Each structure stands twice: as structure tokens, then as C-alpha cells.
Amino acid sequence: MKLYQLRYIHEIARQGLNVSQAAEVLHTSQSGVSKACQLLEEELNLQIFQRHGKRLIGITEPGKIILNLAERVMGELENITRVGEEFTQKETGTLTVAATHTQARYRLPNAVKVFMQHYPEVTFHIHQGNPTQVAEQVASGEADIGIATEAISSYDKLLCLPCYQWNRCIITPHNHPLLGDLPLTLEKITQYPLITYDSAFTGGSLVSHVFNQAKIEPNVVLTAIDADVIKTYVTLGLGIGLLANIAYDPERDTDLGMIDASHLFPASTTYLGVRRDAFLRGYMYEFIQLLAPQFDRKTVDAALK
Image (tube, rainbow, N blue to C red; front, side, top):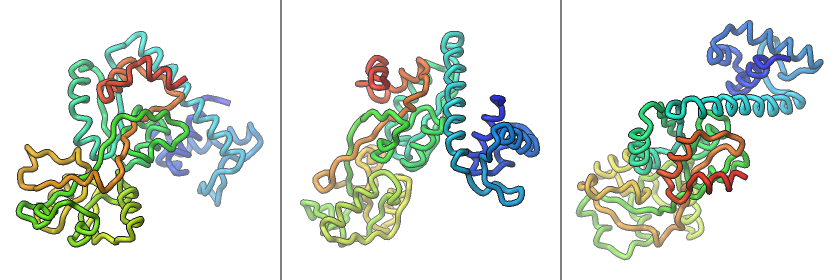
């Protein structure tokens, strides 16, 4: 058994059993990947993958166990590499943060700016997605840190630290009748076309739950994953918008009115997630503290243990 064979089967699983895509990621040939897998199966005297002709169509029961162990081996190899870099190249490396659009657009910029000033030799990547995608990227090792609301905290592989809470607001064009019809209620919201987040994204399911509990059906005419898209269509007069209050900036959004809706919905918690088994570089601890000052290195290490 060779390490490269474990790397190959691990990448095949990551690529949804697509051998050609795995070979591309691994910078080798498709035939070489297939042959290495077959040799490993022969050595173990069992099948890891289910096949239909030459095509992989599934993972066997023993294959699931082997792939889980292979993932752990790949993670430890990455940790060993990070340890070496931490003691020889403290100021260089990469940091990949996965975040929802709202967090990436409205919460991360200040922390990212300070971090890049402190670590100009560290390459910074931001991946955007919904909370499930964010959590899965961190769990798989594609991202070092995940920033998302609610759903990310349900992943056992991740240590999730509660960073801060936020709530929601209603935005409207200026002179909209809702601005003068206070206090805001759920019933008043349903009187107008509503533009809000896609249900898979931050807060969407919680919002739906609140309306369902009240037995009220909002008139949702458009959903989006991007708060700026919501604001654009509200500006065009297509409806009122329901979005995270951190996404409304009175200095920039001068063409929109805002009504606080925090009395209508429970607060949502944004979590910062890291893999429980990952070795964190020193600069990763610093980024965590820049984003959430209450979590210094000692606090994070204590939580990991």
C-alpha cells in the first residue's frame, strides 16, 4: 500500500467518482489513477468502488470505511506539512476562508484588510456559498475557516465558535407607505411583494418558520443569495426587501429606507468553524481573533481540546 494510492481514492471520492476530474486535480493520467486503485483493491482483496463496466457508480461498505481512514491520513499529512511551514516560514502560506455572501461582503472586509497588512506574504482566498457549502468546504479541507449562520454548527467534524448575533430589517424605496405605517408587523409585510434570501441561505428557513407559526403566507416574488441583488430590485420598485441588518449601510444605501424587524424574528448566530483535527497556523489564530476578538489562541486551543 502506497500513500499515493490513498490520495488517489480520496480524490476520486471528492470528485463524485469522476476519475478524469480526479486525475486532472492530481496532475496525472486517468489510466494511472484507475490502475493505482485497482492495485490497491487487489492488495486488500476487496472492492472499494462499485462499477458498471469501466464506470464507477458507488462505494462499497468496506470502501466507505477505507475512504474515511484515507481522509484522516490525508488530513494528518496536511497537518505535518503545516507544522513544517509554521516553524520555517512563519510569515508565508495560504489562508482560505469560506463564507456566505452577507458575511464576506459586510463582516469580513475589516478583518481581511488588517490581516493582509500584518501578513503580506500570505495568500488569502475567499470562497462564497450557502451555509451547507461553507461547512462542507471546511470539513473536506478545501477551506481553513468557515463563516456562516446556524447550519454550520451541526457538523461534528467542526469546532464552531459563536462569533456574534444579528437580526433582520425591511428595506423599501423612499416614500413607501410602510415607512409611515409603524409599528411593523408580519401582517403588514405580507401586504407587499417581498424580496428576500433564497431559503437555503442565511436565515431563510428561520424566516419561513416564523411566518408558518403565525399562519401567514408572505408574498415572496423574488429570492436571491446576495443582499446587494435584493437591494437592487427593491430600488427598482419590485417589492420590499427582508435582509440581514448588517447588510444595510445608511451611508451607502441612501436610496433606500429601512425599518428594524428584530422584534419579529429571533436573532441568528454567526459561527466561525474550523476542523477539530486540523493544525492551525499562527496566522490563522490571528485571523480568528481579528474577526471575533473574544477568541484568542488560548481560548481556541481550549475549545479544540
